[in-house]
Image 1 (spheres, helix red, strand yellow):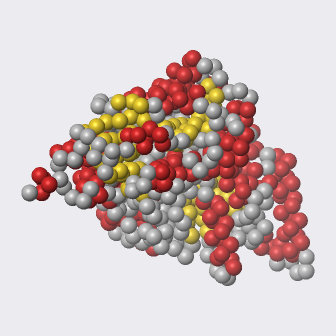
Image 2 (cartoon, one colour; image 1 turned 90 degrees about the vertical axis):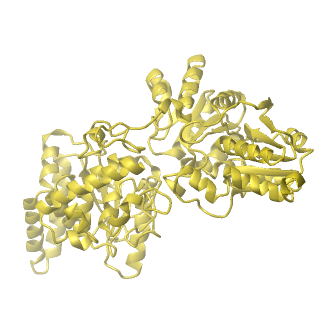
Image 3 (tube, rainbow, N blue to C red; image 1 turned 90 degrees about the horizontal axis):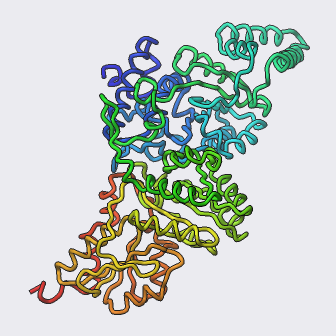
Length: 619
């Protein structure tokens, strides 16, 4: 890695020839592929923007100029070029580099990312602050075409045109055509507007007319109006230009020379400017080029064969897909909705079997929720499949558009609980707290596939909003030894001196703790909640009546969580939950240990609550 090893800051790449930069791009791709194979990560989108990121850092002066990568799915090259090469192998590991931009990680990360469609709003704010401070620094937002399906993008575009901001929006177009070319003349203007001869002629003409005494500025203005009128006559005016935003492109995202030329031209504009760049997902790695969706967010894989370790059929998302498809076969009012996460949420089979009842609305969670409410108002049974951390965007739509009107929808809340490698931007630990604050909401949190089937059956039979939340990955739980009692199940390990109340995937660790306690002479009962809200307090009190210690174990935030609700009803109940901090990234069981959720820690806490080990164990 001779070239990459010599890069410690963006200044180093400004000294390289284009031939050297081509070799550097190859080495960067190799480093990204190797690291993603070991650690997992967002591969396809990162491979597509290697040359673009190099061109950005050669054209601009970071960290004085500010870069914001929308979502952060494409910031790996940025990290490699900004002094983090030596730590890149730690990407997405505990204590290592984040898979997204993170302000506390580097001065080159101007704004924290992780969710889509936020970069433009943040960029407008940063550019405005720079202007107020009298700075002439640039702010650059790099957003994929998918981000333009999110409403925040248009709110930002509507508020950036009249402020004289030094703002450049790089549209990373790697899949969908936002401004499709129509006809030969349109294609001609797309080509000519990024050529060096065009820029040279345009700028020389502008300087010539501006130099004419007294009337120069009027000639420039008249010339611009004539040019724009002619352009509208022979080609459809670009969407961005209709908003008053300058537009350059499209330009080939693999061509460093053209990229730098267009970016330099964008710097000369006096208005916010969009630079339209066409890139290819997975560029440089054939497996990712052929199947960019599989390698978008990928786990461990073999670099040589491209084989991804999956076991998809054993995952909660896959089981949800089977459940919802079967339900749709029985009931033609069932409709599935996703926000650009068809395969990620397990809806591929549904979309193929019932295309007329499947809706991918793009990265527009707020719209998806109110769209579901509209369907429900007409007697349909909408199911919105969404990651827990993305559901956070829908709080107002849940309250105002759905709950307040008494409408029945089903939320399939994927990635609930800890989402280890992606970290704090993706942990699904807030949903129980905020959903349970809304009147009329029912929340289910299954541990096993049988739990899931029971939960969705109940969710469809409920009224109002029903949320079924389940974790990422494979099911590790078992129903063996549990006795169902309404909306909860009970498992006894030798008695009920101690009681652990819990739900979801972490039940497995509660059972292991109960076994440790039984081996220490402490009979322990595990109560697994299937419906976590509203709580069946009558049953919970009955099953904890003879306990000397009660501990609620909750893989979610403590404030407003189920543990606090139970503790208000049963005096002396302790709560072990996520309290007062954002959980970092890292391997699942390592995160559990940092939160004191591992079996030995759970059993130790209960022993302490009981005042120590039984006498025969301490003699």
